[in-house]
Amino acid sequence: MSIDAWTPRLVEVYLAEAADTLRRLPEQRVRGFVSAWPEAVCEKWDALGCEDGPTQAGPPSPQAIDRMDRTLLWLRWLEPEEQRIVWARANGHPWKQIAWEHGINRSTAWRRWTHALVALAARLSAQSDATLSRHQDVQHMGPNLVG
Image (cartoon, rainbow, N blue to C red):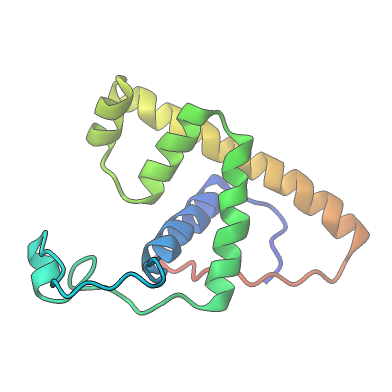
C-alpha cells in the first residue's frame, strides 16, 4: 500500500500501534540478577497471569517494531507538551486525565492534540511527496487500519 497523503487519522493509528507495540515488548531484565522471592502481585490481572488485562496479545512482529521505531521519531517534531499529550492519547488515556495532568481544560487538550496530528500529517505528506517524486515505486506496509 502506498500512502500518497497522510491524514491526522492515519497518524493517530500509527501512534496507537506504536504505543501498543511498545507495551507488548518483552520486559527488560538485569542479567545475572536472580531472586528466590516470587514477584509481587500489584493488580488483579497480575494475579491471573495477564500483563495488561484479559486481551493481552503476544509479542509484536519485527515489522511492527520497525514501524514503532519510525513512528516514535515523529514525536521529535513536536513541542514537549504536544509530545506528552499525543503520547498519552496514543496510550488510550482519557481526555479528562490528560487535561488534569497538563493543567488545561479538555477542549484545549483536544485542540493541541489535533494541531499536533495535523502538523505531523503535513510534514509526513511533504516527505512522502519528495520521496515519491524520486522513487515512483515505493511500497509501504502499514498497520491494520480496520476500526
